[in-house]
Image (tube, rainbow, N blue to C red; front, side):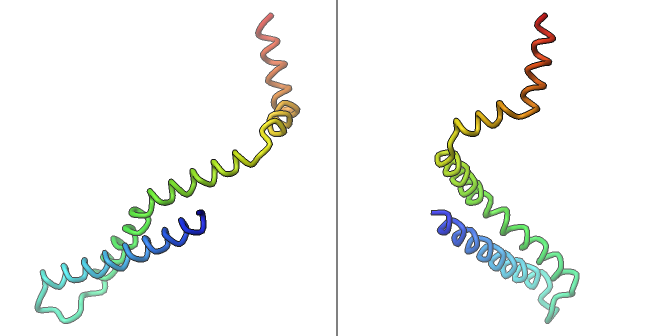
Length: 104
């Protein structure tokens, strides 16, 4: 499933970037029909906007992919082992000592 989501996200990014670039370029040409080629600064602005459209449209897919990976790692990890290691860590021992000092 993760490989499917990765290929799907790549397709969404490329599709959104290309489509946005082409449509914005058409729009710029419609406002300036006398120009054969757009000035370089307009290409830069169009590229910036279309470059932002890919990640913007891909955010929901990335969220699903991240949640799927997190859930997969939680289900396949030994939670008791993780809890035991956390309890043995020096940070937890310090926290226990501090909490016992405040209880007195």
